[in-house]
Image 1 (cartoon, helix red, strand yellow):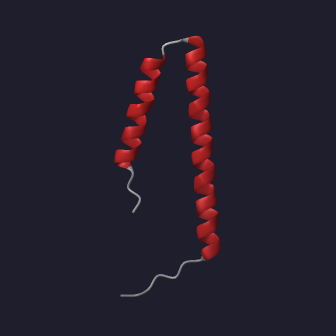
Image 2 (cartoon, one colour; image 1 turned 60 degrees about the horizontal axis):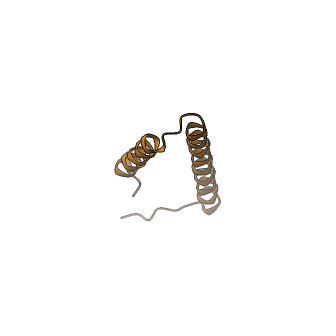
Image 3 (spheres, rainbow, N blue to C red; image 1 turned 180 degrees about the vertical axis):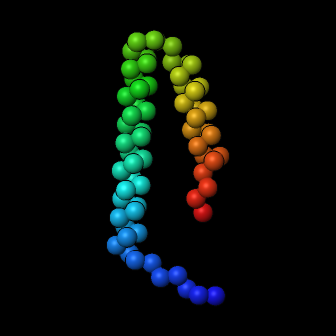
Length: 64
């Protein structure tokens, strides 16, 4: 079997992009959650929804 050659600069760049995207998504989720709690007040509903959404993302994660 052939050995795969990786470009380390490209790998670092892709990891950095992935980290930035994840941080932006978490920031948006936090802002949405905070605004929902401020206006609606019912944290149980949104907390359950966020937990279910995170669970679905974890189950569907296909990274090796």
